[in-house]
Length: 173
Image (cartoon, rainbow, N blue to C red; front, side, top):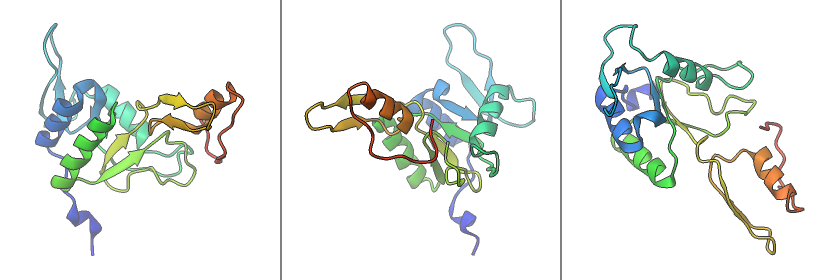
């Protein structure tokens, strides 16, 4: 059975939804053409009918996100989303579920086994912009942080308070 058949291919409509949901600055994609915007205008999108689509910067971002840290594994995603809040993540995942769009979550993309590399053309859900340590309780040692916090940065924040993160993975930083 071809597992890819369960999921749809991204469309203009999907990209427009993501742009409305999290803002054009938080969507890197090569599905539809970006139109140059004038002052005080929202960025607009048109169907991508050729390769000269004005998405050069997004192509560079996607090339990096479609590969693991060692450049050993490669994916084919045409869209990466950079939500800033858990509400935006929830909106994205609800839409993807309802529309049968495959998702590949990424944290720091520093893993060494290719687990965060898209297999087909999944939407990459990057948590890089959700990278704040929200609180550290000096008494209990409990810390609250967003999903995109890199372990090395969390450990540094804890060390400044005389604590350490009791988890040490080979992938750092």
